[in-house]
Length: 313
Image 1 (cartoon, rainbow, N blue to C red):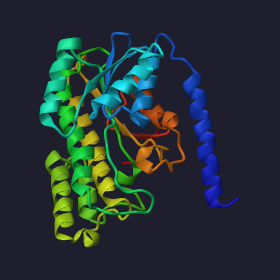
Image 2: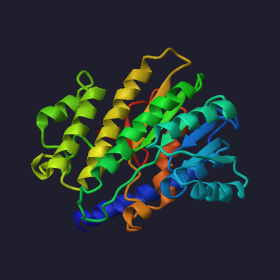
Image 3: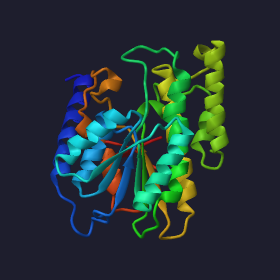
Image 4: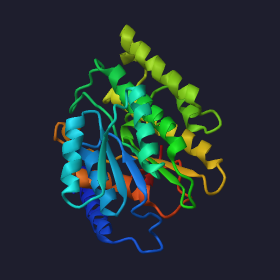
């Protein structure tokens, strides 16, 4: 058996393990949540986001399904409501600050606050080996800046509790700082991003601005950026770094007010984003995100996961 076959075999065994784990119910002492627990999932009218909503609601949580297109979101929510799940819909365009503000006002008025935020909304315009940066600004704005803007707007609404609030960012291994095959070539920048003493929002934003500037002037191919799915990889690198930074900030909160922040890679999922060419089902792709949102262990924050296992940033 060659290395590719062995790798495929390992992945299939792990997938089967996770599918089995998903069938094991949480015990009463593990269940920190109730029907009054409120979760928000962005970009959830289809694919991974829809599955995250379905699985969270299946655990008895009240879930607010959001999407940019109201008709698609209403239809998605109605499908889950017909299954008897506690799911409501509200329109949210993560690129529109007024939409974010209106959504937050509605959440506060209807629920008083939330307990779980899953940032799933994202875009990718390349399929397979394509590597166009024609829509790079849209990709970076949606995947990185919008995730950050929604998170900042929602943090004041995350309710204080002994269990702590949860933020889960759907990300990608393509955005790893230390990836061997698809990383930024600038060693100094990699070290700064890896060092929690030098990592800052200004550093991450500066990296995004530099990338977009090079896209504009046509020099991005010689800029030392990830060579595969470049714009998507850079945007998810930003998400991963911001996850670590935010987790550090939230860890300074007093007990009872803490918020635990993690990100995960769902894998190459068979959804519209991959042109339905993925090898992982949406159900399996959603699993680790739901698992992170419900983790009874409060000490886990600022980590990156795939298939319910921690991986290196």
